[in-house]
Amino acid sequence: MATDDNELGQDWLAEELGEMLDEDLELELEDAALSREIARIYKDRHPDALDRKIYLTSLIQMQAELIKLQDWVQHTKEKVVVLFEGRDSAGKGGVIKRLTQRLNPRVVRSVALPAPSDREKTQWYFQRYIPHLPAGGEIVLFDRSWYNRAGVERVMGFASEDQVEEFFRSVPEFERMLVRSGIRVIKYWFSITDEEQQMRFLVRIHDPFKQWKLSPMDLQSRVRWEQYTKAKEDMFARTNIPEAPWYIVEGNDKKRARLNCISHFLSLIPYQDIQHEEIHLPDRIFNPDYERATLPPELYVPQKY
Figure 1 (tube, rainbow, N blue to C red):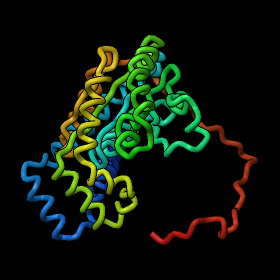
Figure 2: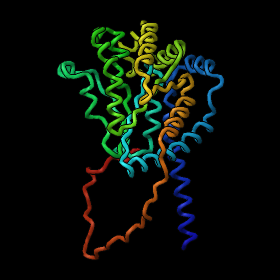
Figure 3: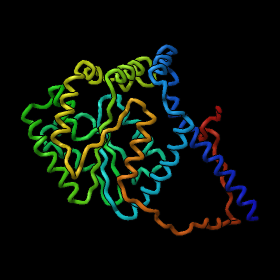
């Protein structure tokens, strides 16, 4: 019987790993709808791209470690905030997707706030971010954060110079306050070149699955590349504090960027294995007097596949 259970477990594990790989391949095949010409140019631009097998193997190993980190955060009631910043199309969403892919959304959640409402514009600038900060045992990933004021709001003229200056005076103290309260604050900037961003925008224009990612703001970011560069340099100079330093991720190679970022994130948290009680599946209770009702066929989803 033990041998049968062992074989059953191995068969299930092989099937589960197959499903995991299928899910990863589905994410990796997001570019499948590209025109042949764009795909060829993109491949020529990335001749040293990381081998897919190496990438997927490394990713799954790191995701196993992320599960251990999640268990440790939940057990110790740690609070972790990770900010993902960078130019449009730099790869922030891609790494967040891989970070959260196998984790419990009740423990690890991502936040991507829309443009502030008229009411929010009258509030203290940091106020709308406060409700999303973690409680004990949670990790929150911000896909763009309060640093919008130092970037898009400043460059596009949505914030005055006085508002930007007040932000730079306030944000170091705000983050120190978070750290003193027991929140780990980690800040990543995804860096790509001018040419790489142009190529990724062309991909989005020609890929019907990705056209929704392009907004008028994205297109303006191309026009104002140098202004964004100056704003970024100013941001680093004024907000890179010991309590919450910036970490720059080289993002031209998407796969390497994801692995490097996740690996670095794991290195920053002193997580340990958490021992769990052994789980035993209880026997099902059978009621001989219960008779399962036959449900009408219109309640079922048609089996087209």
